[in-house]
Length: 253
Image (cartoon, rainbow, N blue to C red; front, side):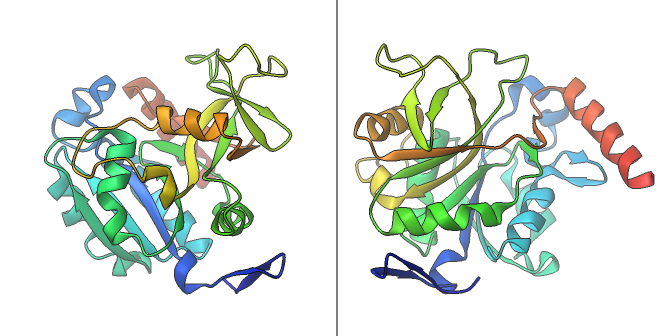
């Protein structure tokens, strides 16, 4: 990933843009009994675990230092992925005794993250998103313009109301009466964040991400983009099975 200039004022180098985080600490209650013995992000789909799909796509985009948090059956994740050398990356683990929710997990992992801005992806989704698209928001956030950038997708059938409104590249709270138009989109679980977003989040304590995002939106410091490609919230055994069959058929064709 080459050095990039932003308005001639900030330079974000390959070294300090190479870190990404994958969230893998969830219990996966809706996936039981599969997750009684296997962490949800390690469940195989299309011949490889969900986590490996993310690692490979992140590496292809130049993110070669991966931080993964885990809690439920987390040692299995470490045993499966090791230090990341087999995938052409380096992996460090943020170990949680019990899941700290999204913001709590990110805040706890911050000492392992080398940069002021970094992408985060939920480990329990399948997505064919090109992570190199996040270079521009990484540079913009590094320059201090925003604290968050979210990738939004069309609302799936199980979440028809969506989460946020995208007006150009600016995010609005979908539930706010001041939202400029009614188009709602769903948060994909992929975002870019500035460390400052977690300045008041205590490491080691549970904390959700949504309140922090709404504060950033209210302050006019949150951007977004609409991704219309392949994205699946692998939230139930039925969705996992359907995706697995589809991917296997695609690769066999």
